[in-house]
Image (cartoon, rainbow, N blue to C red; front, top):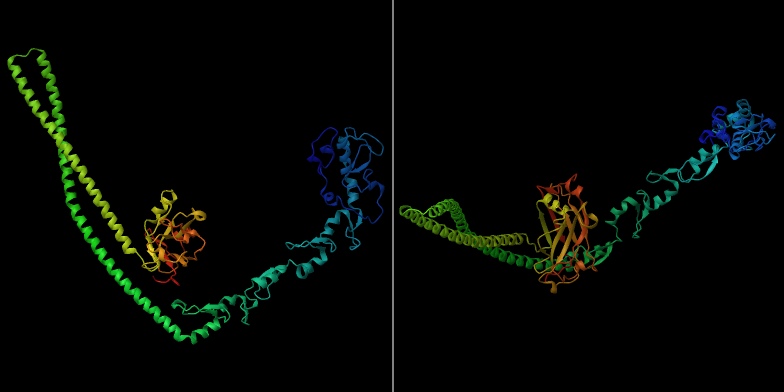
Amino acid sequence: MALNDRPSSNMGGISRQNSSAAISTEFDFLVRMNFQFVEKLDEQYICPSCRQVVLNPHQTSCGHIFCYQCITTFLECTSAPTCPVDNELIKSNEVFQDNCCKREVLNLEIYCTNSPDCSSKVTLCRLKDHLEQCQYESLQCTHTGCTDRMFRKDLKEHLKNICKYRLEPCPHCQTCLVLIHLKNHEETQCPEYLIPCPNACTQIMKRQELKEHFHECPEIPIECMYKKYGCSVRDKRVKVRAHEDMALKDHLLLVLESNSKLEKQIADLQVTLHLKHQEIQELTIVVNKLENEIKPLMQQVSKTDNTLSNVQKSLEDQKDRVSSVQIQLQQLTRAFNQDPSPSELGLLKHSVGSLKQEVSVVESLKDHLASLEVQYTRHSGLLNIHVQQLSLNEERFRQLEAMSYNGKLIWKIQDYKKKKKEAVEGRVLSIFSQVFYTSRNGYRLCARAYLNGDGTGKGTHLSLYVVVMRGEFDSLLPWPFEQTVTLMILDQSGAKNDVVDVFKPDLNSNSFKRPATEMNVASGFPCFVTHTALETPKNAIYVKDETLFVKVKVDLTGLEEL
C-alpha cells in the first residue's frame, strides 16, 4: 500500500522527503510472489524481519535494510519502534529508500515463476516482460462462459478447436452460434435442418418448409370442403379427399338444401325490407307533419319576441314618465303646503287627473306584459317538445338505416380527436355502436370502444370489445353464445391493410351467457391497436377526416335460422 495514502505523524510513518512514498511500480508486480534465485541470496538482500528478499528496500539510521512492508509495520504498530537487530530507536524521519540496494535487488537473477515447465532465467526487473510472453504462463480462456485455464502455448488451440463456448457456424444454415447451443439450435430452430413430418406422413423436409407442407400433408385432419353446407366429416386429408369424391350426390343434396334456405332468407329479407320501407315512409310523413306544426310555432314565437321587445321598450318609456310624475307629485306636495290659490288648486286637480290616467296605462301595460310572458313560456315549451321528438325520430331513422341482420356491423366513429380527448379527460370513457343482429330473430349485439384504452391498454391503446345484449328472441336461442367474432379497424387508403383480431368466446364467461340485464360485460381486446399505429401508420390510413371505421363480423357457421 502506498505510504502517502496514510495520515502523517511524527513517529507513525516515513516522511515524504525520505521515501518515494509508495511501493515502486517494479515491486507492485513482485509482491506476494515466490522466487527461486539462480544463486544463493546474500544476507544483505534478506529482510531481517520477514527473512524474504527485500522488496522496495528502506534503510534505518542504524544502517539496517528492511523491506517497505516490514518497516512500515514497525512505525505504525508502536510509538517508539526499535530495530529488531540492534534495538536502536527507529526515527521515521531518518528512514529512507535505499535506491542502490533497490537496483541490486532488481538485477538479481531468478528462475521463471513457471518453472520447472519453463527453464528461463531472468532478472527480477525483467520478470513481468518475460511472463507476458512466457508460453507456460497460466491464462483464462477469453470466451464468455468458459472457466478453463491453460498454458499460453495451448490457448490458441483451445480457442479454435477445444473450447465448448467457441463460435461455430451451423452446418445447415451457417448461423454462428456458441458450440454448446448448436445442437439445441438444430433440434428446435434451424430453418434448414431436415426433420420428419410430425404427422407421420413419411416425408422429410427442411423446418422452414414445414408450414407449407401442412397445406398438402395427407395425414393432417381437415374438414370436408362442404362443411358450410352441413357435411360433418373430419378426417385425414387423404381420406377426406376420397370422401369428397365418393359422396358427391350427398353433397349436391346438401348444396340444394342450403340454396333453398338462402332463397327463403332472401324472401324474408325482401319482406323485411318492404316493411322497413313502409316504416320509413310513415316516419317521413310524421316528420313532415311535425315540421309543418313547428313552422307556425316558430313564426308565433318570433312575433311574440317582437311584441315582447316593443312592450319592454314601452315599459322603459313609462318608467321615464313615472319618474316625471314623481317629480310633479313632489311639486304638488310643496304647493299644498303653501296654501295654494283657487286657480292653482284647479291646475293641481287637472295634473292629478292626468297622473291617474298615466298610472292606469302603466298598470294595464304590466298586465299585458305578464300575459305575453306566460304565452311565450308556453310556446317555448311546446317548441322544445317538438324539437325533442324530431331528434328522437332522426335518431330512430339512423338506427333503422344502419341496422344489420347478417352478423356484420360497420361502425362509423366521427369526431375522433374530440371523442378521444373526452376519454383522456375522463368525461366519456367509452362509446357504443348501433345494435346489430346475427339474423332477423338472432342474437342482439353491439360494439364498445375505449378510445383512450381500458385496463392494460389504458393511455396507450384503443380497446375494442363486443357486447351481448338482451334480445326479443333470447328464450329461443342456444346459450352460451359460442360464435367466433372478428374485430377490425378498416384501412381507408384502399391498401386493405386492416387491423384484424379474432377471438372464440369463453363458454364459462358470464359475458356470453344469456343476458339477465340489458347487456352483459363486454369482451374483446384491451390492447387492440396502439395509438401510434392507429394515428400514424406507415402503410395505411385508419383515421381520415376525423372518422374511424370499425367492422365486427360474427361467424354464423353452425347457427340455425329460427
